Image (tube, rainbow, N blue to C red; front, side):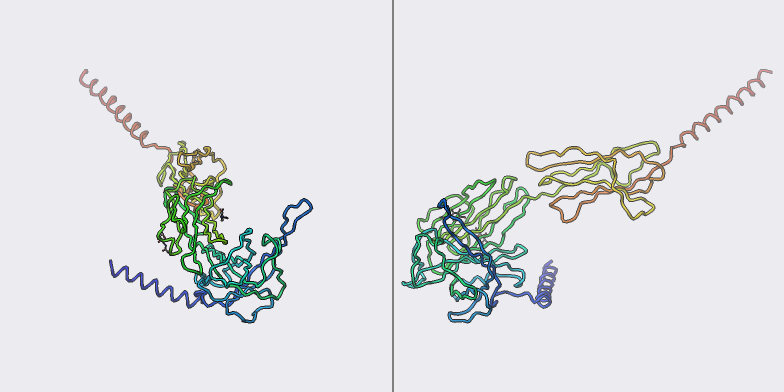
Amino acid sequence: MRLYNMFWTFGGLILAFLCLGVTGSQSLYDVQWLPCLFVDEHVRLNEKSHIETKYINREAVLQFGNVGDKPIHPTITFLVTASKVDMRRYLEGSKDTLLCEIRRYSTGGIVMRWPTAGAQDHNVWFTCTIRHTQGLFVITSFLRHATASPAQAQIDFMEWKEISDGDLLTTSAVMVVLTQTPSVKVRLSKVPSLHCKFAVDHKLPHATVEWRQQQHGERSKLFSYSSRTGKTEGSGVDVQAISAGNASIKLPPTSIHSEGTYICSVMVPPLNGSQDISLTISEQPRVSINVISPLTLTLGKGEKLICDAEGYYPLDATIEWYIEESGGSPTSPIMENVRYFSHQHHKDGTYSHSAWFYLQPGLEDSGNKYTCRVSHKSLLSPIHKSFYLIVKGPDYTMWYFVIIAMLVLLFYIFAGRKSARKRFF
Ligand SMILES: *[C@@H]1O[C@H](CO)[C@@H](O)[C@H](O)[C@H]1NC(C)=O
Ligand SMILES: *[C@@H]1O[C@H](CO)[C@@H](O)[C@H](O)[C@H]1NC(C)=O
C-alpha cells in the first residue's frame, strides 16, 4: 500500500517537473512589470450639485523596482517599490493569464497618517486588482503615492491629482487583500471554506475583519472582529488565524439559501479592502430508466418507457430519448413521440423531471438501442442510460401442444371405438 502511494507521489513529482519544463510556467515572484488598465476618473458637480463621475480607460504598467528607476514603457507607470507587502508572492500562472486594473481610491474624506509614511507625507491612494483569468485568485493591493503638498479639496475625489501619459508615480504597496476562491461551486449539505487573506506593511495594525452575505440585494453580517477592541460577532472564522492574516471562513452546511455573494472586507483605516466571492449550489441529477437491458417484447405487446432525472439543482435539465438502429445507422434520431412529466420541486430545493414514450415495436425494431440522454449545468458531459430491444414473434409453442394433444385424443377415441366394436361382435 505504502509502495503504491510512493509510486504515485514520485509519479506526480516527475509529472510536475515535466509540466514546468514544457510550459515554462513558474512563480511570478521575479516579474518585472505587468500591463494594466488604469481606470481614471473625472469628477465634477453638475448643475444640480450632484456628483458626476466619468470613467476613462488609460494604458498603464505596474513596474516593480526601486525609487529612481526609469520607466520601462512609455505609458503611465506605477512604480511599486519594495515594502513588507509583496503582491508578487501570491501570483501564479503566466503573465498572459493575469488581468490587472488600477483605480483611484478615495478615503471618503478621512485624512490620517499611514503608520509607515514619513511625517511630511500626504498620500494619494490607488488600488491595483490582479485577477487570474481562470479564477485561481483575485488580489487587491493598496498603493500609496506620497506627495509633499496636502490636497486642497475637502474630499480627495473632488480634486484628483492629474496624471499625464508618460508619468511615473512612485508608490509602495501597503496592504493586500486576496482570495483564492473567487467563485465557489458546491453541493448541498457541504461545509465550504471561503478563502480570504490579507497582509499589511506594519506590525499590529488596527484591523477590522468582516464577512457579509449578499442575496437578492440584501446584505447580512456573518462575522466581524476588531483587533482594537477584541470584539467578535458571529462565527466561522478562527480569530487566532486573523493575526496571521488568515480571514478564511467556514460556512454552515449548504442549502439552496446559501447561494449568493460573500464579501470579505479588511479595514485598516483609512483603507477598506474587500473581495467578493460568489457561491453557487450545483447538484447532479440521478438518472434511471424503468427497464433493464435487454428488454424482450413479444410482437403485438407494448411497454411504457420512463427516464427519470432526479435531485438536481439548479432547474433546467434536458431529457432526450434517441434510437440507434441495429443496422448501424450512424445518425441517432431524437424520438419525437416523447412526453414529459412536469418538473417537480422537492423540499430540499432540488428538482426532478421525467420523459416517457410508449413503445410498440415491430420485428424490424429488434436489436435497436434506445438511449436516454440527460444534460444539466452540473455535468461536464451528459449522462446516458440505454437498453437493447429484442422483439420475439408471436409464441406458437402452446398451439403445437394443443394440436398434438387433440390428435392424440382423437386417435384414442377412434382406437377405443374400434376395440369396443370388436368386443361387441
Ligand atoms: C486559515 O484558517 C482556517 C480556519 O479558519 C484554516 O482551516 C486554514 O487551514 C487556514 N489557512 C491557512 C493557509 O493557514
Ligand atoms: C468596507 O467595504 C465593505 C464592502 O464593500 C462594506 O460593506 C463596508 O461597509 C465598508 N466599511 C466601511 C467602514 O466603509
